[in-house]
Length: 478
Image (tube, rainbow, N blue to C red):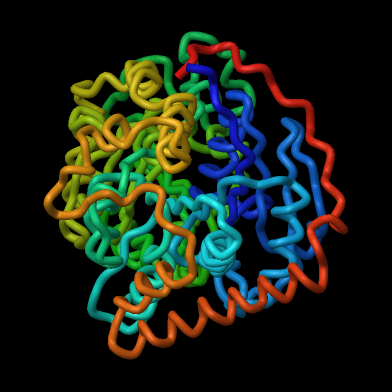
């Protein structure tokens, strides 16, 4: 079978230069898809120093669309104003598949709606977990149900994330694949302890021998300092951990609204010589911070995957983390010490991890090779490419779903959904007594805008952009 390539648009509010897990995921996935011969562009919102069209060094074109930002780098949801710009980009770049990322991204949801109106195949990747009771989660879940009522396929980064998304959006589980995040293990190598020159740039190098009872043990935290990342738990736990273990220090990297509370805690407890606040850390500097430590502490309250703990393990750090969301799926038990998302349990789990390291009961020097064998962006790209093959009809339904869905008595045949407006309206109408009618109205207006744009700005008047030379894929024909 010939290797089929696609023109793909990755759409999300979250992309570089902003640091984060979703941003890194999009970049790494796009890079590996380009290596496999595909054309990939990224559509995101503009930043103060980043507007218009930019090219990344590997040939990925990034469109920084000028829209107002309202909260945590997400754009104001206008539903329709993005359509004319999106249509122009899609036609210029001859896009075939629209791949949106993140539940909280307005651009992602709007792009999937507009993509379906234009007759394009659509994929959505969910990177987060949400509840079902609070007002914000209810609104987010209803928005997700609207978007995913008419999407070709959904990807989740963990099995817990899949269960959460299926329940939130009332999806057929067959429509959802689990493809985890990964790390570039070469970028997260531990220090070579016997080689002093390899540690010359490190402010506090690790000892070249197992930790003794009087050696300083360093705990690293790199995270956005928000409530959902467990910063309140961290603020409460640090003084107790340092009191119980005097020969211990903390390095904290990241920024957010909870940073002020951490700083106040440090001043109140006079811990300036025990806790180092680094502020925002660029992703390319994360490894240099991590290798200064022995333990990575991750007190998050909710997490779909937790790429940062994989990066920390790859750097040879022992992981102390909360057993929430998809985190228990990420690493084997010998690399992690789990805790409940409670102050007392985090303090106790950290104490057990410190004792294990000081007693030389954990072989962290083997973590890097183990992580390297478990996680690979090339594998993630191959599995994502298979999803593209499935929704485009390049592989059979039986091969894509694992069995012949045409004979499924429950009607699980979800691939190749009809683009006809009446069929789309039927899918949206089932989203709720009042919401269904509102969603149908949105789809009709979106379709009318599309018809107007096709008349006012015909396709043959839009210049086709020249493609960056594609890489020749030399792998197996899959």
